[in-house]
Image (tube, rainbow, N blue to C red; front, side, top):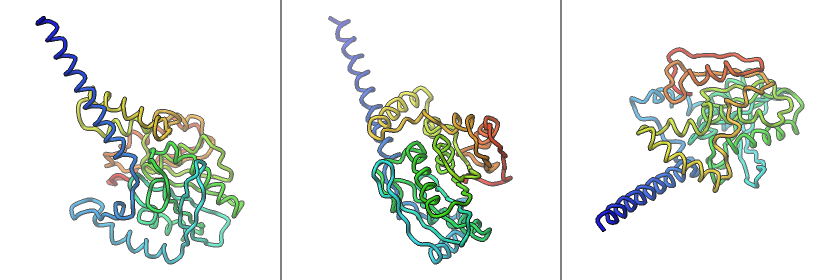
Length: 287
């Protein structure tokens, strides 16, 4: 009788732990995938944050870009309305920019837009699915977003037959590398700034506690992504796709980046089979 009691007590404890981990994982999944609004993306970095000193420059470039761009929309492969900002330089060359996780195309992309615009490129700054004015139920760290890249490339090709550069930062970098699995007519260069090698690994590394506990959490998070978002966090990773690349790629990373450290971009650069180059910006932080 005593043995049975101990067995049931242990079983109850295991079930409690199982349910607790599953609920924590479900909460993390909802947090990772929830829509990001303008209000969320426009939070200014507090004083002391390395980004703080750049806020005035970003705001100035954002106001400039708003003055020269107009709103454009496309429909995604799965029926969502996606938004972007387009500025014509009356050129046959176009740059398409894809921002990072929880960011905003206008806030993050305007500085890049100005650089390319002044080099004579038409500029399309995309707001990724689930962010701000773009619809989308889930943010999938470049998995579903990669197919959106193909749709935006088609949009530009319908306006012009000239060369296209696609430039992504952080999750946006993983997004443009993920698009290597699709046909990308007239894309002459991919710029991948601060990319991770695999969406699953990026989420796994984002947890700061015990490795065994992280594995259990990621088991449930991975299942939720498959079930609800229809996204496989392990499939067609940037790490896998650069091994099959045919488009030239410029990898960029800051030497002081702790979120996607230089070793990740170095690995992608080493694996890449197309023409490629790695640019490490000394002293720079993430993105």
